[in-house]
Image (tube, rainbow, N blue to C red; front, side):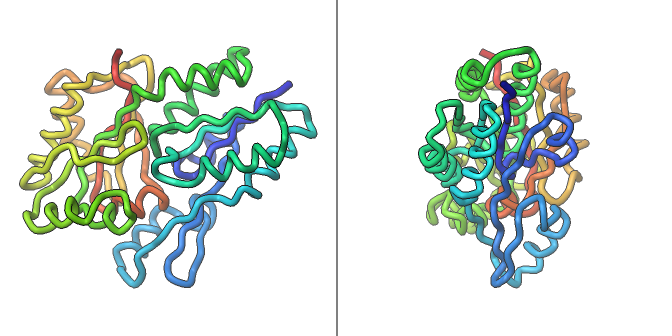
Length: 281
């Protein structure tokens, strides 16, 4: 009995890695006015940020339909395989709900759904861990249980240029977003337990970067898991950020890059960067 790992495109899991690790990615939908794209399939990150900064339309996102998951579940059921789904936080999207509806329609006991409680590289951390456990011989139920025990330690801290995109996407209140715009502060956001919160605000991106470092220092990295430098349309801040992490003795030993794709980029906008990692116990 094989284990089929299914994730959604909000994980920003690269296609080449998905193929190598036998992971199926279900795309979310991105709408720019009358035009519809499928995240990671019919729109690249470069094209997305060009359209976003052009400003003709503000994009909106839509979760995959239950049918998109049901097709995959039925194929696994017919083959007698187990299914492990690792999905974008249910507090940020209805993607988990779509998969749960599909599970009910499929009436197959060997489907295990994990609400990641996170996004982008935070989900990638769980995917990589799941693949490692699968290749080590664990079954889907035990892998799902292991992911549940780790997911609460995942941290994402990111400096964003503006809170306006989070406001438009309904992820922050208008009052929070307006405060950031009026004072011209650079916010640091915290994504944890599936929710987005403003951790701090600083004058200028240099100060915001120091606030990022402060957050990481308060919640140190567990180097048993990979960590990710997150960025939207540019890696310009990476050198400075990494330099400060190294200076403070906080640089993760397993550091990778993760470009934020259309689904998450819609909500954070251009000019954002940060770190996703598992915090030490």
